[in-house]
Length: 272
Ligand SMILES: Nc1ncnc2c1ncn2[C@@H]1O[C@H](COP(=O)(O)OP(=O)(O)OP(=O)(O)O)[C@@H](O)[C@H]1O
Ligand SMILES: [Mg+2]
Image (cartoon, rainbow, N blue to C red; front, side, top):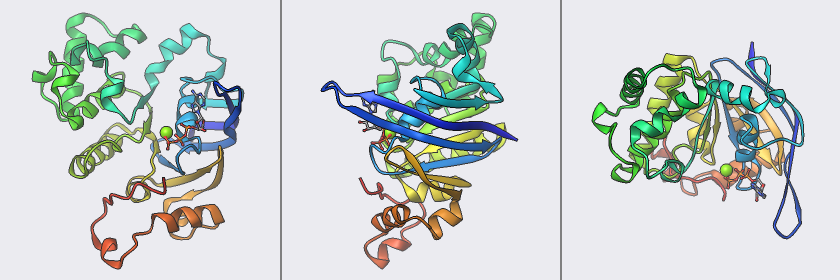
């Protein structure tokens, strides 16, 4: 059964100069429970806007979004606050997304407090410690601050915060783009393990075609706010049908035969 169903979604932004930008232009798709849909496309194609619209971090102009069968565009603010625990997001820049004044405990428990259904302080602290452990951080981190953590540890905190409420859907917006290669590989492995263990549904936004190839079962290619091609990762990435996807793939191809053998986690950053 589809856990995400999006129909004809649109979003226009107004620039400070008064120019209109059609960031998402009539996008429709669905995602089955437990699946990972990768979204690729060059910078500015609308990937992050789409991820944010899905969780109502931006308000869409029109179109419909069903998450777990719920029409999330129809939720009033109070209901949305309560329901948010089922649908979470991990951002690209872990440090920028973590409040530097708060302890790791306070950062990770915040979504529990917003949802308002998660018991006493002690219970919350235990739950936070358990979630940190799941992302590879010991309870020793509870009272530390983001600035005292490495980039990889900060992103683990970002992931713990998104998982602490036991969500069903997680939007991963370039979750490893700011990390170096070895850390990137270990975080991706962990995200894959968590997906299987918890039966999570992922929307995985990335520039990096190799990462999407390894990580996602299906892929959508975004260009100027539209999906130009959607299909299994194998079909779309091995045998792209649309000229835009073919150009995107050609631009991401390693320039030398040698580079093709350097392993699965490539450093290519797509074509932007
Ligand atoms: N808050 C905003 N106000 C005005 N324009 C915006 C806003 N957010 C995004 N845009 C514009 O919408 C378009 C899509 O942006 P978006 O950030 O979704 O692209 P993206 O595919 O995520 O790019 P990247 O790969 O660089 O992260 C761009 O033209 C961008 O400038
Ligand atoms: Mg983006």
